[in-house]
Image (cartoon, rainbow, N blue to C red; front, side, top):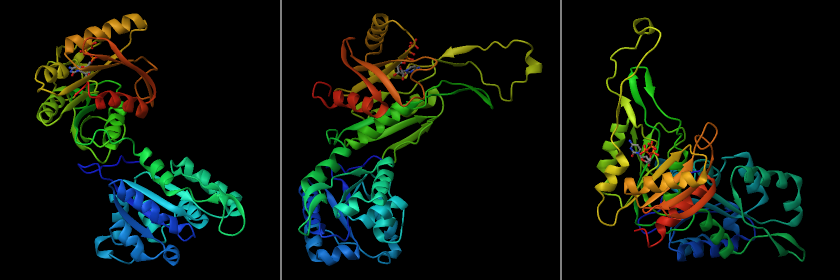
Length: 408
Ligand code: CTP
């Protein structure tokens, strides 16, 4: 799933799919609530939806043309363009038929192609009669969608269209909008420009070998994604990532510590926050062989001569402009908590950072895993937060500290 990329005002591009059920009249309220919250709403309505609610109403409320036909706007490739542009897709109401189509990945109409062409979060608000909602086919389809990360809001239990009552009534518009916006997170970093390094550098020994480290870049990429979701502009300096960089970030690929340093220096001036989560080589070979090092030419043992690389983080901290925040990471193998804290505090002071995120690494800890356990120290070495969990929630906790007024 791609992180939303709101404009400078924090405005999201929301695609609102409306399908053919009586609850379509309540979709007007959903469109209205998104518009009132300041977002750009593009409605994709099925033919069925337009039997329940008029196109002029939807256009007036959303302030944009309503899209229905797969064969309209073919020259601008509209069947995928809407999905590619979307920061968020909400389908309200989603009929039993729509739920089944989504689960099967059908692309027979404009809403289907829009959803398939998008990596934005998808939120659906099902609405149907209780029997249809409880039918094993619908139950299985909903489970499939949930397993793909789709957020299901409602349905509520209550009076249905006829005289019957039970689960199946579409959730109220405010609830749908609130749930959808909660997924894209708080918008507290709008206007902030964040430079993040992620991954691990590699120092070549010869054309086929390098000295590297086990960093996958997962925590740095999670920070980039979370910062984008909260409205920041993100530049990601990426060293050999094992995971995809978020689409909304400006990505600069680097290989060595020297390349990483150059990229960070070039972009630090435009950033109000710099986060060094990359694992940077501390040493590199003094010389790099032009051709492959041959074992017969070397003998039984090979000694490498290594030299120190520049400390990128300390350099950035020393050159920081007023108001700029510098955040470092420290990956330590120390087992003793007390000693880990001491090492972290000493490192925070030595590097001149505003925050230092300390985590324990080992043969089976930290690297490559989807979870992390960290403590965050301030520049004086005092613990300001401890958190653990998946790397996304750890990223959000670190960004919470940035969003506080104390850290500019
Ligand atoms: N770092 C850096 N440049 C280097 C080495 C590290 O900018 N040449 C940064 C890392 O990105 C991280 C922080 O410094 O944010 C701490 O890295 P770490 O390897 O824990 O610290 P070192 O200063 O290298 O100290 P040591 O390895 O001796 O613990």
